[in-house]
Each structure stands twice: as C-alpha cells, then as structure tokens.
Amino acid sequence: MELIIKQATILSSTSSFHKKKMDIHIKNGKIENIQKKLDIPPKAKVLEGKNLHCTIGLMDIGTHNGEPGFEHRETLASLCKAAKAGGYTKILPFPNTFPYIQTKSDLQYLIQKGKENGLQILPIGALSQDGKGVDIAEFYDMFSAGAIGFSDGLRACENSGLLMRALLYVKTFNGIIIHHPDDKTLREKGMVHEGFISTTLGLKGVPSIAELAHVQRDILLQEYTNSRMLIHAISSKEAADLLNKEKKKREKLFVSVPYLNLIATDKKIEDFNVDYKVRPVLREEEDRKSLVKALQNQTIDAVVSNHTPIDEDGKKVEFPYADYGAGGIETAFIATLEVLQDKIEMDVLVSAFNEGPRKIFNLPVPAIEVGQEAELCIFDTASKHTFLTSFSGSANNPFLGKTFSTQIKATILGNEMYLAS
Image: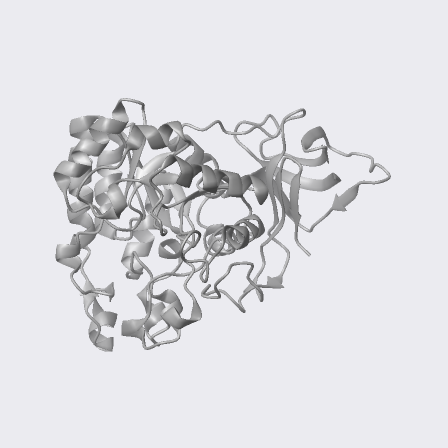
C-alpha cells in the first residue's frame, strides 16, 4: 500500500525532522520521502487531519494475554488487533498464561503469532518455574529463544534470595528482570487503596507500604548485583519519591507506571465500578500527582497499558468478588494525552510510550528518515470520536462509551498497516 501523510508534526528525537510539520510518503513498507509538501501519486491513499502527529510505533511492556489457556478472555489475534488500534507496533506480553511461558517452544509460538498478525511480539519469559516463586526458570535457554526479559508478571517475588540469584544470572548475558513491587504479607486481602474511600466503602485497603517495602528491597538488590532491573507498575507517592532520589544514581535501574495511575484515582470506585478494580490499585490525588511529577522529570522511563482482559463472568459480580484488571491497550495512549498533554511536554509524554520502553531493553530507536522501514503511529489531537467498540476479546475497558478528542489514525509496521475507519 502507498500512503501520503499530510502535514504531520514529527515527534522522534532520532529524526532530523523532530518537531517539524511535514508530508510523509510511505511506499512498500518504507519511508519513501519527507518534504514540506509532496505531490500525491495516482494510487496513493491520503491521510489528513486537523492536528496530525507522526511518531515511532508505541511499545507496551507487560501486556496481559489470554493465549494459550484463557482464549475466552483474549486471543493473540484479538490482542494484536487491539494493540494496532492503540498505536502499538511492539508488545511484550507477560508469561502468565496456561501453560506458563517458560520454554523455547512457548516463546517461538508467541513470536510466530505476532508475525502472523502484523505485530512484533517480544515475549517476557518466566522468572520462576511455573510462577511459583520457588526456583528460578531456565533464563539462558529462553533468552536464546527470544525472551526479552524475565518476570512473573504482577505476581510479586516474596523470596529475596531467589530474586537476587535471578539478577545475578541474567547479568551474565546482560538480561533484565522485570519485577512488580507488591508485598502480599502487607497487602493481605486488600483490594483498593487504603484511605478515606476504602473506609467509606467498607473495603479492606492496600497500604502504600506494601509497595514501598518491595521498592526499597529491589533497589538494594539491584545495587548489590549491579544488574539490569525494571521496577514495574508503581502506584504510590512514597515509591515515586524514593525513586526520584535513588534512580539517578543507578543507570541499570528502570521504572514504569500504568497509565490509569497517572490519570485516575480511587474516586473512580466510589460507586463500586468494577472496571476500575485494578492492580496496582488506584490511589489518591496526591499519589497521582507524584507519579506525574516522576514522569515529568523522567524518573519514570515508560508508561504501560497494564492491559488485562477479563471476561463478563469475572466482572459482572459484586465488587469484592470481581476479578482485577482493565482492558487498556486501545486507550492508554489517547487517554493519557487527553489528560496530561497540557501538563507535560508532548514529546516527553510520547517518548514514555515508545522511545523510553525501547531504551529499557536496549532496542534500537527507529528513525523517521527517508529510506527507513516504516514503524509509525499517526494520531490526531483534534479528531473527536467516541470509543464504542473494542477489538479486544473482553469488554472491560473503562473508557467504552467515552468521547476523546485524540484518535489513532494509523499504525504502520513495514507492509502491515492499520487505518482507522
């Protein structure tokens, strides 16, 4: 397919056209030309908008996937469609499926499914065998088969010795451990943030110290091993404040945050809205502002969708019995722009969705330059539309029915092209 993108502001720090408004010609999966104004070839499609922007394809860390084992929630085909609709060209799914992703064949299956569905899947292999937190998995075998990192997803590692051994092991091949801080002995049966709203609703709360305790430990382990580590999906002011101080001393320590924790608080569950029952929990406004500040000063390297598809049976129950998780890969980017683009420089905000994640994993950052393969996300910040239908296999996205002023217009990965209808 041949495409002309008209008058798009390019947001790509590696491009000589960064922050410039240009016409872009895509042909045979490559960037054919970039000029102030281009003639339109006879057979080319034209993409226009009121305030178009063109950046490199987005990359999501820790996407939750249903295949294999939970296809009633999400298949790889539906996940890839949803990801492309959200502007993503790369996703890094967690290993929490059935069977657990911990063998060469498991990884190759995911990688191949990505190719079949026009998306690059870079799978995360298991941290512990079967996710039980007892013995470390076979890291090097998985690394050789294409695992980009190792994690047990949102299942935190309580065994500090195991986590230390894992960090030392991956250091031998410059691998990375992805760990979500959540001390379950402190969280216990908490299901929402511990505060005024949890008390008002009569729900057991999750204290911030449950996150902070693991963040402190993880910083010490990373410092001791001098290995690469991503502290994944923080949610609290206390964690953000500590990392603001400590991260600048450690070039191998990285931090991510779920987009919902940047734009929403526990007020969303005042009416027991199960679509906002997520992990990590949504906390108070003070926490949200601290996370935004940490993103502004680039303590936070990546914003993630925390996409967790849950079927109807898991959500259409009373709040205490509902499953954790919200669909988000289609709305993470546009919803974050909607709320934060007036508070954070656009290029800094966009970078947390594409360049930042790539740098964590030592992946090359594509350049928007003539002759390069096209790996692009094109969005319009003045395209009012209502998010009515999800490509995901589950309908637990809290923004269904929400009207946005920003829309993903196209996602391009080589010859694969998604165009919004």
